[in-house]
Length: 536
Image 1 (tube, helix red, strand yellow):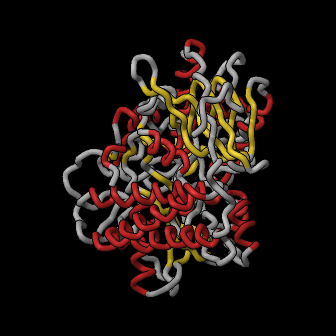
Image 2: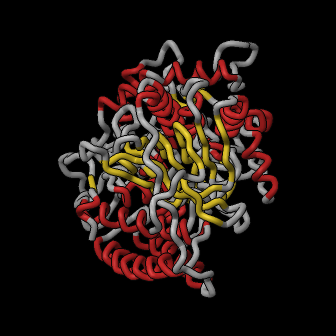
């Protein structure tokens, strides 16, 4: 590295890496005197929030209760939820909905009502408590939040920037503090420096580590890997949730079929038309996602078929089109009319229940560094996330983090001039094929060996491969000029290693983590926590 720079390329009070619901919600909590910079790896509205269909779980109905929502969340989490985190997030759910409503999110109402929310039910919930905007809730939330952020004069939005690494410094008291980060400006293909009083990671999950995923391409575990390299602990990385029903079609890129389809009576069928979900759980299609995904995986392997089918054609056509306009239109594009026939579905990697450890204000192990949304582990989800608790967590914890930062930000000095990015010894790559091959290999062995059903031998095979690939990737990273693909590959190799190691430590089957070598669920032992000092 070169000598200290006299000033960073960008200087701000609060830098937010990520522009989904979590990052934008946090930004909106900060007062007009606070300079805020929001970085997006793509366009401002290109993250996972945009893809969320089902809705937001919250206790709205008078016949529902906070205690019931808490119980459902803990039940789905299979004994690993943090009760304090669950209560805090669930108790603040209704307020989060009302806040979005006030900002302009047009939630679906009951027919003939301008005030009463239409509530649907999804897997793992004992009541109808999913507030939604038809079947495109995430898009409505993201568009509204992005519009509010663009109006704020104190918030700068930088699109097409990929964060590279956090910058930390030791204070006079020896405390390690986040001073900023490096980021690749994709527009100019150069790495720039950011100095900030506080940094928020809102980078989403890591489902791109698997070959088949319902997530957008940018979900490559960037924030998890960056925090790990900087010295933060991670927890419960073995718990990657697989959504049971993604559209099966070669051009569909695992398009998600919202769980609300099953909530409104959709049935899972074998290719011959026989229902099968009740054989695995009395709740049938409305069992938690881990159970439904394993049931589908079992039947596909037993029969040697590529998919199963989801059928809601017994409902009136106008009901289907009214409740699921986006899913209906998308299926039609691929030749499936869900009002008349079953549609083919398969499981796909969907959500990271583990992540960077934080408290209930989003604070990580490093002073000045926060993590909110899917990148973080708060203890809400335990061993399995119940449907529509993801956006709920984003909104509640991002609000808490924003308020915590707002109360202290102006008492924090700007960091000392940060270290320049030094690429004087690197050169342009002439071996891009290495990156693409390693990309493909990581995602395939993670799908084959660290997927819905695991064994010790499969995990050992995956570990051997990720260690070899990590060495190759690091050699490549140290010798060639970085680009977006290389940065994502480097991060995914780290996340894959963390997932594998966490899975190998858990000698039982619990929630999403299912292994044939330890099929029984033991006594709860708490989260699987990894620290940088335990790296292999």
